[in-house]
Length: 381
Image (cartoon, rainbow, N blue to C red; front, side, top):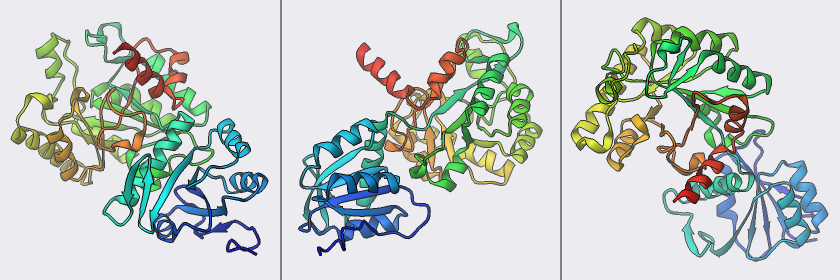
């Protein structure tokens, strides 16, 4: 009998719901006790088998324990296991153990004792899962919802009510779970790969009156939530009027915001005046972020956790100030990684455009669209 005990899988966490189900395949030579302990303390389920175990037992463990990622140490797994993982899109991370506190990953040494070391490993796990499955939670971006031809304007930031309604019914019919960033905070973003769940986040920028008048009734009818990012010191889209000669479109009133909030709509910051961060100095950056946050928190008597950069444009100063102000997440437009957790303060969204029909919408909510979009961008460089 070896140290793994009658060739049974060792489970190192007794929690019913972990964040990730991780299978360690190791020889008896590596000391990975500290690594297992830290991952378990973060809420993950850790299973272990000897690397020399036969492929049938390894595959049985993968299926029975709903493994999200395999972490192997030093050596390679069998061809059959590799083939299984390729077919079923199960990621494998191979590392070298330098000592009880250090791992070598892709030629770089990760010190598990350092602050953030184990969190960085979890981020690497997430990257491997996302890159292997070609999937991550879609964050949709809307602006205005319109039902009149004259409300189209010139900035191409609208969605026809008819199309929006069809899109929302598509989500309902296909069993998507619509969540907000506060919901994500409760389930933990690392748990977004939960089996059987198709999460999606619906966001609206600026806080237009039509979000209340046209979108809100549909959201309520379908029992959906959304996140709306408010510009707090303007009454209309002054930024587009001044820059592009756009038509005037009113923003929501305080009463509208409160009613939507009471229902369960989440609100986030979007600055005071819809400025461009690259064009302003650090002091004005600080004022735009902190004062807009205070405006909304005072109105709703609630702490905000997510922020949207106007035009999707962030600077390092803006990102740092968003973090320091207490936000947990920040979204861009079409900038950022395809992996949600690569940078929680630079989350890429999927824009829904006026001409997007259901066939386009289906692709955009598949969780794979950012991979397609980034590949297209790279080819065009």
